[in-house]
Amino acid sequence: AKKVDPKLFFALERTFLAWMLAAIWVSGISIGIGSRSKHEGAPAPGDGMEALCSLLFLGIAIAFILYALVMYAKRSLMIVRRSPGPYDDKWGPVVIGSLFVFSLTAQYCIFWASYYHRAT
Image 1: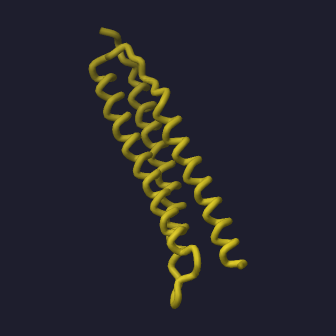
Image 2: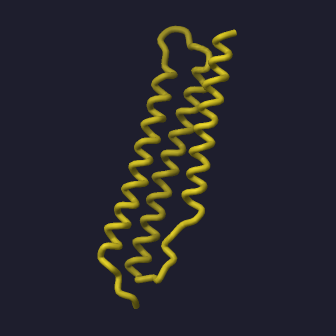
């Protein structure tokens, strides 16, 4: 069995915390969008769409958290077992990044659609 460098555990924790920080930022975006959709009185056009976008970003934040937890558990088990690897993940960040780009694009399109609907 190979000797495990103690710095590897700290690198794993830093990576986990970086993913959690990204999840906090995305959930903050979700809260910000959700707070815009709450108006007093009659609902404005597009309120339902802003709430939908808020839920979309919340789903992305949950995906970040679940991905971070699964990868942390998988990699820490590999470290404890002194597995030679591979420790990288090629598809997880690509899928999560694609979901994030999709949700940003959806938010942009919904913003312009509600703007156009309010103008007419």
